[in-house]
Length: 197
Image (cartoon, rainbow, N blue to C red; front, side, top):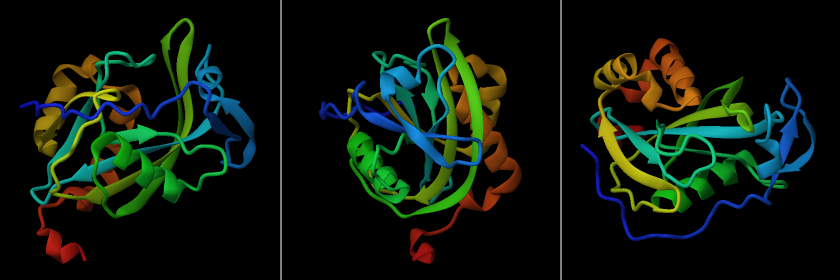
């Protein structure tokens, strides 16, 4: 079931923000404006994906805002974006979660991977993506400029949805979710939040 989107409309994404370009070993090699980094087949840049689970082990999904240049209205993981020039990954992940969903939580790093996904003839993602998992039962306050809807879903139900309608989900999320299911099942095991302290 979709949850209602809140009244926050802060602009937090900018085409002219400088992203961090990297090589295949994740070494910084330069900077490029966000709009340019996503043109054509994309230029490899550093990114992150956050997976936030509640104490029942359900994943908080977001439906990307319709106005997104790439994969608007597709369902995806809790939050994903890029560290900006001069910004550490730790600062970036907490900044972006707060900007998009209005809460904070502790994250554990899971893995990083490289992928390229073509959206159309003029735009693509080409990222070296760091993937993190966290836990929170705080109700999200959704930034409507970034997100159309949010909902919680159990892992088995998510597997069934992806199998039945893979075209509804972002390409990076499907790759990440398959790896989390195969290698990091502990991040969504049901457990009281008190035990995570």
